[in-house]
Image (cartoon, rainbow, N blue to C red; front, side, top):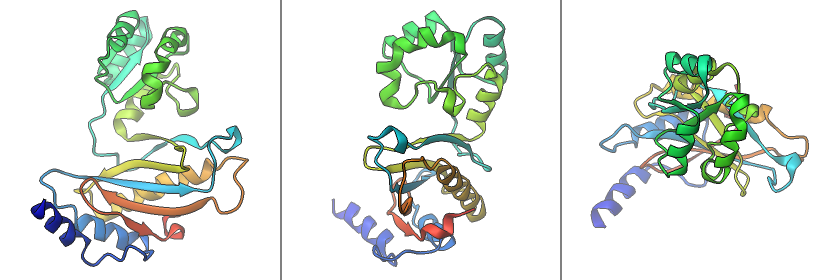
Length: 231
């Protein structure tokens, strides 16, 4: 515990937890403190002025990060025939129909993102209680229920990130790796923030983006001046 406390104390040096800093400075602070033995994920959290318990205040969408996520995303596709072949050719890791249904029902979810053709949704709908809580249920609003399975697979592999506001009004996502250069991280953060801002629901009143912070997997959070994340 003493060693852990010493590490945390060191990475917190120079960070004022009450101060809002401009995005470039925040990125520099987070990167220089990402000292774990692995390539830490850089994450963003946005506290929004919404109450997602109301349907007209739900925030949800997908954004293609210009510099990718740095993650190897495993994609599963529910499709048959020619569409299944298209998915495989595009690089999908798992493709199937009833056979894939049985695998998922059995508790084996060896993928990060799930895509389905519209005709497969009656089948996939049976997995709502399994995929729903994990945020993996295919949805046409975020492009994961589509006939363009090849495009959806390539987008997922290339840096597409889904976001959905949580009960506390917070949206968060991984937007890159500590090994990314500062410019790439800034571009990704601004692209993500722009997508969240454009997804502002009709029921949102007053200040929409209340607080923004970025952090690394093993690091501390740095509060960001909300205006500096605008694209």
